[in-house]
Amino acid sequence: MTTSSQLFERAQRHIPGGVNSPVRAFKGLGMAPVFIERAQGPYLFDVEGQRYIDYVGSWGPMITGHADPDVLKAVHERVEKGLSFGTPTAIETEMADLICTLVPSMDMVRMVNSGTEATMSAIRLARGHTGRDRIVKFEGCYHGHVDSLLVKAGSGALTHGEPSSPGVPDALAELTITLPYNDIDAVRTLFAERGDDIAAVIVEPVAGNMNCIPPVAGFLEALRDVTDACGSVLIFDEVMTGFRVALGGAQAHYGITPDLTCLGKIVGGGMPVGAFGGKREIMAKLSPLGPVYQAGTLAGNPLAMSAGLTLLNKIRAPHFHERLADKVNQLCDGLEARARAAGIPLLTHRAGGMFGVFFTDQSAVDGFEQATACDAEAFRRFFTLMLEHGVYLAPSPYEAGFMSAAHSDDDIAHTLQAAEEAFARMAAA
Ligand code: PMP
Picture 1: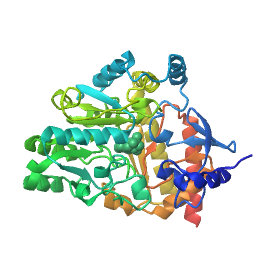
Picture 2 (picture 1 turned 45 degrees about the horizontal axis):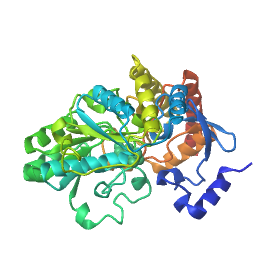
Picture 3 (picture 1 turned 135 degrees about the vertical axis):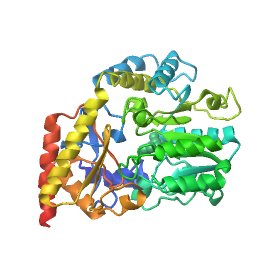
Picture 4 (picture 1 turned 90 degrees about the vertical axis):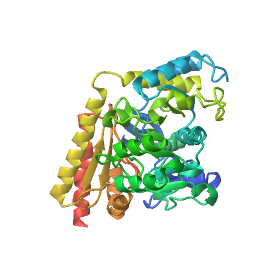
């Protein structure tokens, strides 16, 4: 049998760090990453035959569980017709119509191949639309590896200690203003001083890349106010939150309407897909209607559209998101109770189908500073013990957790039992 350690060793010969996305490397966790062979429902199965209850879900897309039979069937049927044509196809219109129905702030939408492409294109469009260069982002928010957005970023950039990456020209980074997440005063002060200079504000309406941090009351409202007043474009990066926090995304949950929205993950059903869209007036500036250029050889790929459409149609089922949120609450309540019983300081956040677990005695974690002040060593210990008990959590204290409709009461009970044992070991150490 080939082990994960052997595969990781071999992978490092020709792949930088042995991985095609940095957070997969388990850096700082003192072990080789687990190499997965297959997945089904809420479970991952590694190359050594070990089963794990999965709380990553391919970082978000697997909201109905892995290898969803309906999604697989749609892809199988579609694959017989050919993989890609580089022409318009009817299924792209079906996808656009469905997205614009589910997310009413989107009058028009363009499909791309990743979340990164979605945010990159949205920023270009906002700049082209306003004729301004400066953009605002928030510390600890991650919007993909776009040059302008890799400034004080979260996710793997934060885990690996490079929130502002070398290779991003100063001339570009200088155009990105970063503010503390959830700091309404900082937003109002900046806009009072130079709002007329700002092309766009891009924000994760629930931050999911410095662990999971929901917006404080009034934060998203303030962003809407100041951008409206100054003619700046408000971009919600709902790559993670879209169709997960609620069917209509975080914007439906919090009742704030952005100008542009970026989507990814669920919209592709597990295939490489992103999308961006919004107000007709802005989207009409996009080529070939308008002058702002953006394109993609494989954009709107029929296989990816069939996977995404099938998944989106499934999660429109009545009460789907309420049931998912119930599962998240069951898990988080259980974790908090068991940690309390063991004397481990722990706090959880929940937002629909996503959650965060913080090892901290702080009373609240509302932003980057508090998130990075949490006990990273306690996380490392917890992660390792949970993995030993067959529970796969995101391998970083700066990532959100994801649940799916496939997680059963038994899976949650098993997870809580594992956590109870892990907390006992941690308390004894
Ligand atoms: N925006 C957000 C909020 C994300 O969480 C991510 C990826 N986790 C991205 C953008 C980038 O998406 P991708 O990895 O598909 O490029």
